[in-house]
Image (cartoon, rainbow, N blue to C red; front, side):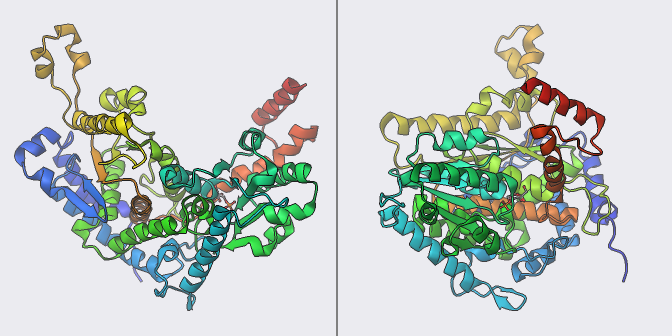
Length: 547
Ligand code: F6P
């Protein structure tokens, strides 16, 4: 068997490097549009309800063809098919990667080790739906017989960011009579602020943890139980006020939660890919089972598209490859995601885990140090706020920041009158920003406005900043599912090209181990063997300051 060539030695890679050199300093958007007026129509792709415009990218037909050849040569499609087939493509953990099975229809067959997992997926969805309906209707009551009015999700990472993001995104679809809180941080302030105004007799804790060993979650769950018992004074109350979402039945039972109140998922669901599993229970209570299923159907649309669409029209493939062009050939270090929807306030934070925990790797699948850039820093907040904060750097700074702009034609149905009318102003900003980023303002245009010569350089916008525009009619449950699946598969494409395992997260472990070792030193001054001098001095200063 011959060696697979190193990524950067592949002819498809060097062809892209040559192509980059040919177009130095960079392809120019003004010139590209002047040379091809049909670009605005040609560089548009659609998937489900998403209209994706990539005309404002620093690419030509040739760039795109070369990128597609790279994807072909690096086995992206073979790996994609292996993922959908349930093969163990997460090699360092020896696990299948099957979040796509979470949204498979009831009649589908997806096998892991010869076992069809779809019936189990739907059995849990049905269990979740029955429970969500009981809480929403008031039939599930607390220990004292009062109905549940507050739901507190306790989890961290994928067991928090997904449900918290989606709850915010779909707030307009939630039962407004219920209060939802999301607690993640081991800083006691998080739980304190979440429960201080709640009545324990009306509060349900949803303990979300794939492993049920995550120290933040177990600590907060233990504190939540103490808070509840301090008010209700009876261990039996736990059964009515605590449910668990986990793969680990033993730990759940050990914590004291009735296994009948556990909603299961499986080791082939990665934490950051899990909010459409049992981890979405808080969200399902908020929006109801029907809306939750609509969201799953949205995911499914993009799964099917990714699996079957031709390469030229395959949207996750395209977005992944555009990212590779900037990250590996044009020197970009980061990628901004800028939603023009207040409801998507947590969307980029969610994507940070999805992308950076997946592709923040520096060894390839065989453990060899990579000689190429891997995942970018993902960042961003909703427009228009970002415009008055960091957009200055994107417009006139020295860094290349490719950005995704996500916007909607309609505001949520709840908005009326003047607030509804504000939507056009929001979207005017949305379009104006991508226009300014792409085409800037030349010195001649600035001078023509009568600007004094000494200010011309300051008021000139170089432009040529690449953006993707993603538009949909409205932010519905289905559209949210489509958006999340789009990014999941984009991240997949990039990890496949970079030849890394996008589904493990060993980098998170070291900090956890060291925290456990340092904690006794903070609490009672126990010396920590082998502590480095800098950290030892900081621990001493901390203890001194606390006196
Ligand atoms: O941050 C590391 C991590 O393992 C994530 O991948 C995961 O989403 C998070 O911790 C929470 O893990 P768990 O759901 O097992 O508590």
